[in-house]
Image (cartoon, rainbow, N blue to C red; front, side):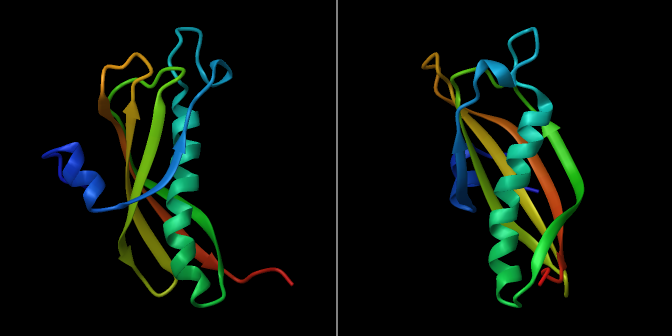
Length: 128
């Protein structure tokens, strides 16, 4: 997984693949963004990196597993959440993608590391 030394070192070692702002519909009754929303965004972000490699072999891919998921700080409505990803390892038909999410706080409190994840994607034959 990524090194925790600083957000800068994390984001420099990977690619920004997605930025999104959650809305009230994405929150629980306490006003915090659902964990499932974060998982879904990670899935999209990770697939961008894995898809680049799968395309080289003219293959499609699907999510196989979430190897690691860590919620570090809450995400709130209006935060700009950025997802950074890098290819951690590659097998003959599989890809492990390490990711982090940062939140630029709507309240103006700066940028914070809010979550980490590692997803596994596998190649499948495209449908004709």
